[in-house]
Image (cartoon, rainbow over the protein chains, first blue to last red):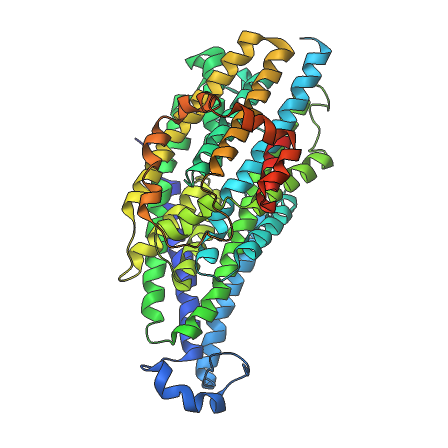
Length: 98
Length: 428
């Protein structure tokens, strides 16, 4: 069977795929969660206070309370990794890794 | 073979390779953009325009051309221009048929299938490296979706856990951008990867025809025409395939779309990095399925997915049959006349498929309509017989087909975007 399947290469693709392919969306989600915070009843309770707490997105339909510095740093770190991964992907493409 | 025949053959191979490039872009728009269109992260027209631009850019990004077609699958020594032409026709016809039925099937597998068929017809079984066929085409076709389902499933599950409790508008807005970014990367990778296949074919044809020296690089006009052919195909958008990928398999939201596209981009780039080539189409389809598997409460239409898997397995023999038929026809008539006959057949079949597609048009206006399982139900039986259906399909509609390929009749059809589609597929 090893004649037909390169198990080594397949294993590498699966492991690295799970780390990067699933990890990046998870980091993105984590960053978003840190930025936006969680509310259990987002629509009804917050509508009055939202406008006042608006953090930099004045005209948007959704207002996000300004996150604490710690959360902001965490979010920036998460997003930084995501952006870095995209940049790495671009470099890989340009360098002719294909 | 005399000079005139050689020149005609060379010209037709170049044109057919560009036509294949066109159908490749056309067929594979959905891989990158279907999810963004389905979640309305991008308007349909914006999405295909973005994808077209990125495909165009991608074609220029890297020029590490793999100058061998179907390397390790057929014996390189038996590839001649007539074989390449027959193989290309097999790939194009299968691409168009799967597009007609909205099946995202691999363009490169269709090309390889056409080549294998043409080689079989030309020199028999000795010209095909069967181990290569199994290990490079059939096994990856089975494994790619499984890998992608696992990766996208894990990603979607984690995203769903992490965004629990985050207001939906906030997560939608964030993930919309994430989705556009990841889809763009897939588009770029596709442009870099697939435009080079056609460039490689054209370069080989030019070398074989003596138009350029054997050690020549890719001429600039080849790069630019391949890039433009693929971008034009992408911009026209294979709306049928987009619809199946975006709406048919899973009802996706922006979180699933972002997870699916990131998984596609990661698996495609990693697989080429580790030298385990997986088809972009199979990976993208698997990722969309995975985003349904990983999302709590989401429903996956396994019936649609099953038909797709069948089509993937049929791709190689079906495209091969068309390629073989074309090669037989080519050598039966012989010389320039045979080549022209095969090319004319391609034009007629393409026009016929386009005419049939007009009966139930899918375009940017209705690509996101609710999925009706009945619409997809007719796919399987037709797909199973497509090999024979290629040439026969021509019979019922010759008048219409000729009319639409002539040109002026195109305007009378009405829709601007589709008029462009017909013009493109007929010319190229």
